Image 1 (cartoon, rainbow, N blue to C red):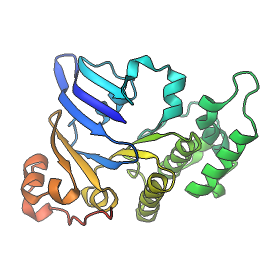
Image 2: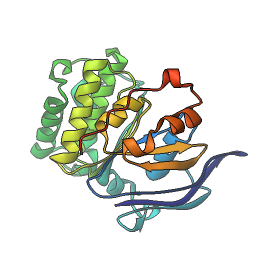
Image 3: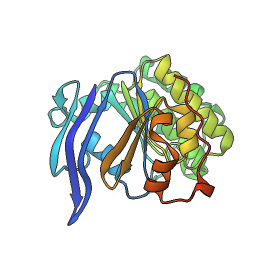
Amino acid sequence: MLELRGVRLAYGAREVLRGVDLRVEERERLALLGPNGAGKSTLLRCITGIAERRGGTVSLDGTPIEEFTRETLARRIGVVPQQALLPFAVRVEELVALGRIPHEDPLLGPRDADRAAVARAIERVGIAHLVGRDARELSLGERQLVLIAMAVAQSPLFLILDEPTVHLDLRHQVETMALLRDLNERDGITILAVMHDLALAAHAFPRVVLLHNGVVVADGSPAEVLTPDRIRSVYEVSGTYLPAIAPARS
């Protein structure tokens, strides 16, 4: 479904991605791991066409990403960023409804199907209690859930999340991982998430990809990738701080 070949990207003289190869099949659920500065978020921006590559190709269903219009791409790929700046007042339900823009009639605006999709997304993510509130007044964790609901309302085939649990408490972390699993298994949505919590990623994702210094150093099941020696080498930590890795259910 998604394929990256030899992807390279640099910010000035600093090369961030140095020949990344990655293939993500339809209906997969995988986590992209790596230390700070490994190039994870930059790789997501390459996939969505936001960042300009220095080399390599990114294709979706065999078509180069550059050949899609922004509207067509938005119907296929949903993105949940780490944070969203909200420069003006917007109610929670209005923010979630932005996810329907790629599907709306350009002349008639939102239809009953769009409003129903927004309502379903709000219910599914469990944020009905936030409806009516100004999204700027929410905690970072609450705002993160609203952004996830916006992506769910978008009804994408491919969902990309950049650290989706970073602002969430333990309960909401667990619930968000359960939601991603459900979206993947019941709705058939392909999931790619940048994660920092290795134990949580290993528990929730059947496949993990480890990025280090701009290249993929390991790709496979959590047990295959997150070995003690590899964690020590990539994250530069001693054995005292190694996380307890529990494999995901496939």
